[in-house]
Image (cartoon, rainbow, N blue to C red; front, side):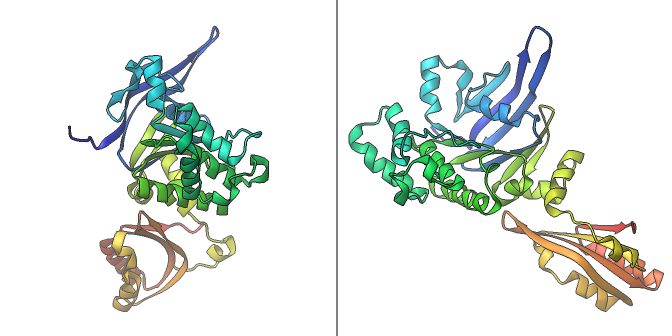
Length: 342
């Protein structure tokens, strides 16, 4: 039987919470697919429904309606016993680590193997291998209280990998970590994805996390997906206003007020996509037209190994020459926007 390219398929997922007084919709008719072996990010502010959607993927939250398929199996059609077995192929890590304080690193990871019925004779070798994968082989006999936040999360990852899962669900897994530790955990997840072929779903409110690691992503608001697609496409051409706000947290920058007040020419914002980001477009423009250009701010980000550059520059010169220069840029640059001096 040919292996499908889809690992997770959600169709019309709705999750309602009903009390005597009101009805709250946590997830509102969401459909999405996640490919085998990809890293998929779901981003949104608190209350957007992203964590609820994630928990629907392994039926920790049972959807009110819809279909949940993991590796071709409809989880909602399984018996309780069948579902427990199916969950062994779906690892999960959390913001709060969820380690047992009274157990050593070894015992925390071994617990997952024992719960799955793994023979005692191979548990020790498996635990040591898992801790080597996450870089904690020298912490095997320590307790959670002796570990840093990043080390605790590495133990959680090792435990989640214990049953050789096909899917790893990450619920705000880096939110409690400092920026440097976050980068190390993301690098680890990226390596695990590449080396083990693991499908990873990441829930986050930080667009920087999506930029660093996700192949594709979805943006949620009020229980719905407002935009989804390849990460580079989302960053380079966001459509929904909420997506644009998220992108601004990573790519946007404002010029100092005093600098803006001193600008006499036209302020132009340029966005370079793909390989064009490496071209000497601005240099060519300045040599072609009788204008002077001054780059005031800019950066080039790499998303999925593709460059995305954003620059703000001042153009001075005869008005007609400046307009010709701007038209030239529009013919060679992905986005050219004349910015009003604030």
